[in-house]
Amino acid sequence: MNGVLDTVEAEPKPEFWYGLPYGYLQLDLQPSPEGIQEVARQLSAIPEDVRDRADQVFRLYAVVLTMLRSQQVMGCALGMHPDEQGGATLSVLTVSTVPTSGANPHAVLLHMLGTGTDNGIVPVELSVGPGYLWETERTTVAPTAPPDGQEGPAEGTVWQGTVAIPVPRTASIITVQLVTASVELADDYRGVLLGVARTVTFEDPAAPDPAEADNARGPFSDSGSGAEGRSPFG
Image 1 (cartoon, rainbow, N blue to C red):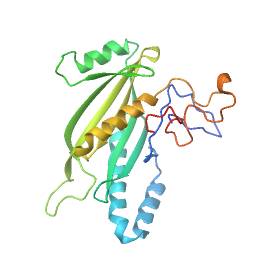
Image 2 (image 1 turned 45 degrees about the vertical axis):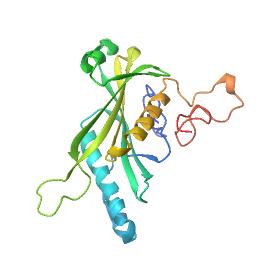
Image 3 (image 1 turned 90 degrees about the vertical axis):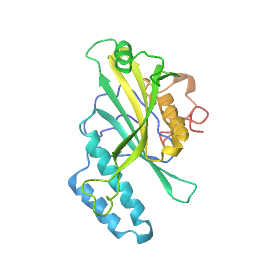
Image 4 (image 1 turned 90 degrees about the horizontal axis):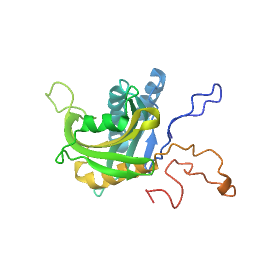
């Protein structure tokens, strides 16, 4: 969820909320040096047969943190799912906001994206209003060790999908973005991306609903993946 409850000092109320699908773990975007060292120590202590995979996850976490610290990211989650070869596919989900300085965010977004018919942008209907989906494949730093003899970090191709949602009442744009190196699974990850975008809401899921006073579950389950019967993830 966007926002964390502070038991010592109340933080500003979030402007929106969203759910996470199964297999995604919310990451700490401001880890302490001691915390990172402790994770590294734990990795060195796990069995050797799974250490390489865990080390890849840790490297991916480090790469993502470096990239996100300079951006207005509200939340970040790391996904890990089994593949058909007995391994695992990794993905990174980020949710951020982009202010538009009081301008109409819908008009600003359309200007940024362009209005041509061949730009690959697909309008999508969401519960909070219209959104815009676009996809790309690009080369970026890979969370693995570089080949022997290569200077600089390793690189790889990733699929990147983004859904942008203009929010007129706050003059901002919400972006939900999913990145994975499993380019061949783009169709599956597009479904995950759209599923997350469909959970975005401007209503506090923790607020009491008089019409559902007898329902102990709110709009989202404890895992953050959405309520039963309403979750796009099943």
